[in-house]
Length: 292
Image (cartoon, rainbow, N blue to C red; front, side):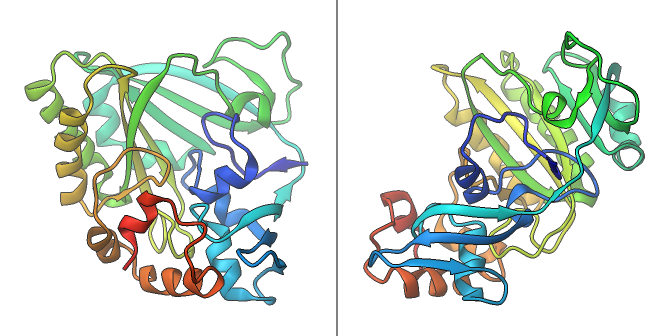
């Protein structure tokens, strides 16, 4: 069996990955939280509760993408599929050409993403297609692997960095990326970390960055220990102008009021969360600052 999709790395626990809406890329694929169909959670009063779409459905909606704020998740049940193999290819193409045909690129293969290194006119594109061919071992380097999905979707990212990621409506993805490129080339020409562009299908989770809309997820990186706030704040202005929603596990500077305007079910999520943890036992200072 195999997960429907995976993120860029696989070092997280499954509960932590679901709690922040971790995702990979794929125009027809949703984030990991959307594949959760059941859970067991230790609540603030010590009760162990089981939940799914029929049993304690409001608790289930909070638990699917919980931000770690409702209890200790001890068990998740997720949708899976038959194990499958992927064939990976990587190529360079002018960034302007990639942005001009990004919809076609994202739709013509199971997984598509690209990276752009500031200072370059080209993008490194990566496409993964399902295949019946036999895996090739030892595994090739990233961009040329053919193996089982879990061996291809996850990557080794040894260089420590900070990261901001926003999800914008899919139809705004290319324009948003072009504006980020212009801002970085103008104000941050020294940046030597790539921007990444991925896609996600819409889902119905209350706090998912893809809730109710197909999404382009764009990430900006900076090396660990290097100044990042001016870069991230400059990029965040552009993301916000395009209706972007920040990734729950990465850097952002939005307030609770900002986020309430981005998520139609924001108040519902908090109301359900507070019902199961009325004293705020599981609220860290960051989440407390967002509380309505």
